[in-house]
Image (cartoon, rainbow, N blue to C red; front, top):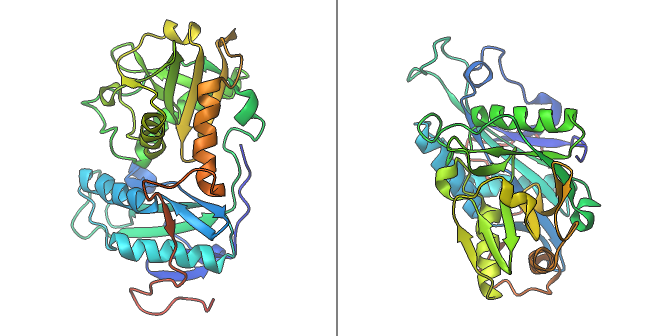
Length: 323
């Protein structure tokens, strides 16, 4: 997993400020009860300069996640887009991983937030490499089935990218690492395949791609949706359906998707090699199409690459620092 190098600046509650100056109170509601929603967004270096990948879609999902938890976001999508662009420019990043987060601040000790509980917003932009390692893009990763199941659909809303939801992912990933694997895969509450600790799951068999449906307690991944469209452009069928875990042992190819993971092949599951023993031809083609978007080799016919604003939107007055 790549290490994060702190950049000079961060955006917090409408102002750009030095990284170390962004502070929250220890009684922050999100710290005690997990009441936060967030996004992970990639900015890629392209021949035309830095471009945000589906950044508007990510910021819309951030608002949707907050809506599910009845958390009013004090900034519009456009204001957050300006904050993201200004921050990337201020930190002089040709490529970046952006983390916007919306959370309930200090205001009550009760589980249910009161109307007086503030909603705070921060945006970080850092340099970050391949989530599961550069070598994994070609060689694949070794994963295991987790003993932890994903939460049932009527317990937590999986469509919300909420901080508290990732306690499940922490258990899955920690167990996998402790056992010597790069990642874990969890089952849903009905005993069928769900997803990794922070990645959507795809299985290739007989030239078709299969992936768990929304009802399997998965996040509606934006990279997942990207793969749907790239595969369709290539005439490759993608089927959403429930799948038993043993299908992983019989797969021709397996790969993960996610903003952090991008498109990462799986080499083995529970020490049983996938037939491709790493990156298979369909996974490789999807990688070529995906990463080709950022080199110009793949035509961006869906309008996914977005030019970032270069000035931070000082929606609540002047920035805390001059950049």
